[in-house]
Image 1 (cartoon, rainbow over the protein chains, first blue to last red):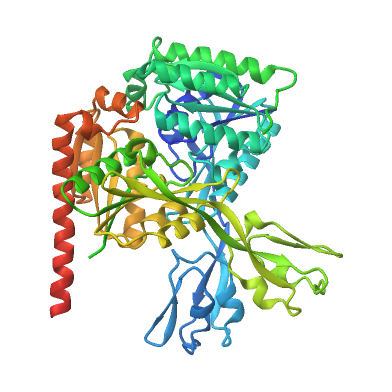
Image 2: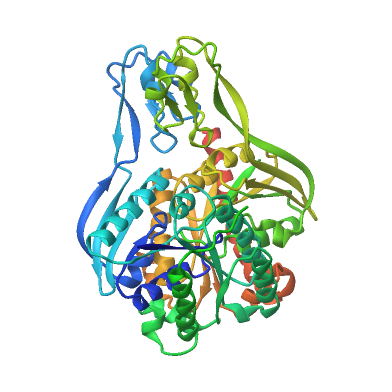
Length: 298
Length: 295
């Protein structure tokens, strides 16, 4: 079983459009949306939810007002500015609270409850291209990394149970917590970038991240013809780092159009960007089926 | 009076940086004292468009526990207290995982042997400088660091006072965004008329409502499939402050790292109108505060 994770460094480069098309092109894959912060894959793959679960990744502190003496210990100890004193009683701002438990532990009146919080929901679903695991992190909730790990675990479980040989993961933008949770230990990463100065800058950061965790990374350029010179520069950057450049996708209104019609690009149109994505898929499949995936090191 | 305007969006790539950088540029040109702050510390891009001269680089640190082995009684209390699994108590030693630590200080307080102290750990850096008449500040998270909120916090704490501070927020609706936009006077939510754009705008709107902060919407790449987005804004009574048309020239200018306002005059007018709209909201807020104080 292989795990392919699509990442980008920068947001809005087309990760989800590529992931959805891959889901349509792959046979026998499990799909997972690990961009829990702004999950969009369900808008294209329209999953039918079979099973939903609450996700509890952290803790919440709440003050039992009757017992609170207003001594201010919690206010003094909280390093996240989450405590206010209101009319002589402590109050905890759930948005600022990081769930560390200091206030509860050190409250002399034992007036602060500390209990697991519900941070979101995750779903096991079916789509016309196979099973899908996805989630919704609650608004202003933390622990996206934990939720991502849970989604990956579930996807692996399904792949094992149903004897599916590929997991396609739509990752999140950036290089922080959810991305790290998405990519550690994956068999192959694919960075979707675009030929912009920002895209080039952010690709470097995400390539450093992949190298840091020793995960093999391949690169493709979306909307490449928007700036062919920069496309070449980015591809040169990639080659210098010994990263395989596996494809170019042209700037094509059909991509947005497919999204608007809630279809994958490859199903929506036979030509243009769809042709490019099919070629990209071929190249990635070859990489994935290679006996030993080359690892890039820092 | 120092006012803070945040530029945020549920989804990445909708044009936050374009809008934040162009507004900073135009406001400064009108003679306002402007500070642009790039809080997208995982993928900061503002410098690409504003070309700041960096005058100061500071390490950004967070504090993490350090165990004095000779004092540690191996009682295991720190490990069982830590909710982030940053301390692991083994029979013969305590291991620390600094990258998991949120720096709450709980372990230090409860250690009966005073064996834990706090040491700084670098998680990234803060850069400050000037881009023409715009003051510039930005944070850069070190590779492999999971948590950006402490860096954003430290970036916001090191800012100089300014007449107007523009916060370029990271994408999404979780901790890094909230850390960036908390306590801002006004937030512009940038979206685009696609199903992804609408879905992510809805999440961002829920976030702003949970924070109980005023905000307005800017539609970028307008003209694609606007009806569902406009219907949503109407239904939710969200003020639309600007609609910037979908235009390949903008994408191309962006790709070259150019400020749209300095190369496309028609867009300069659109941005000037947006600026005027935001200015009006800010003036109103200021006026309300003054009358509030007077009464």
